[in-house]
Length: 310
Picture 1 (cartoon, one colour):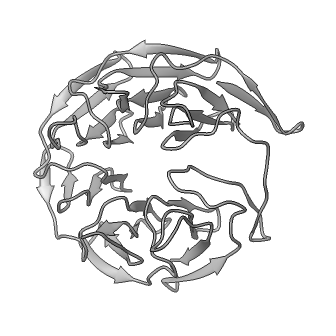
Picture 2: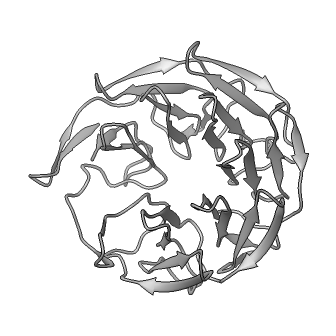
């Protein structure tokens, strides 16, 4: 792991995770620690989990999930517990779900989803429910009794897409892959009506991209893979007009990435200090001290357990 000194634009190394992992998930808990779950390393699918303590800058193992999985989702619920759904165990696509209790550091299996899925999305809605979309199947929603309720399907089946909860409470789903075609379409889920509607399409089809909700309420889509090659393009979604507009491109094409820094108001990108390790399919989590924790992934030599702080 490394600490980025923003005033010197450099990184410094510190401890590593207990397990090298890729296609894992990391999420900030309400107690300020970061929970890292699952993924795989070499030929092993992992059910292990570990905690990063930003005060001590140390890693510690915690209770393991009931099922090894990668390509799953992790969501922190309004009660502080962590919901994990779906994924793959290298043999089967999973419909199982489980809850992590940060107080006891234990996992509890709960009722399974209606459809097995991986590389899907899960979004915590403003009403406390969790919307699960895509993967290779339809959609489901978790209600307060820990049971699953099928809802209307999206207009297009998709995976490797994104789902973002907008400031108005609606969920914006963008891009992904359907039947080997890369999508530029977007759609909105209204949690009050429990309905889907199409919205403006992106200017570029893309998957394995990122979508970030900005402080002005707009959503920034960046990078990913397009029809011909990896992308450095970026575009902004305005929920008021339901339209996308192109904005300044990143300095580098990238996919399986996390984020770059957008200069406020100028709609331009700026390079900053490089990480100590090249990596893809890693995670990045904004922690309570304002730093960003980057974990694991794949470098030019293999799967890594290193982590860094920005």
